Image 1 (cartoon, rainbow, N blue to C red):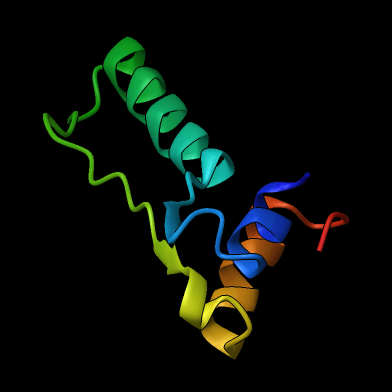
Image 2 (cartoon, rainbow, N blue to C red; image 1 turned 180 degrees about the vertical axis):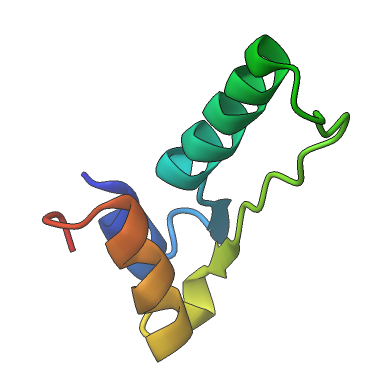
Length: 73
């Protein structure tokens, strides 16, 4: 079973989706800043949207899912 099918079958009530691409870009940029002497942010916000089982078919949830699992919806 996929994560999405678990949500749709109510086997799980919700899941936080880690958006690794955005987090990776932000973290990499801070490494570059540190190496080049540019200002470095001490704290990075890691946005991890929650998708609840009862909201899995909403446009907002579908947008989050598409960013994390593009071909697997």
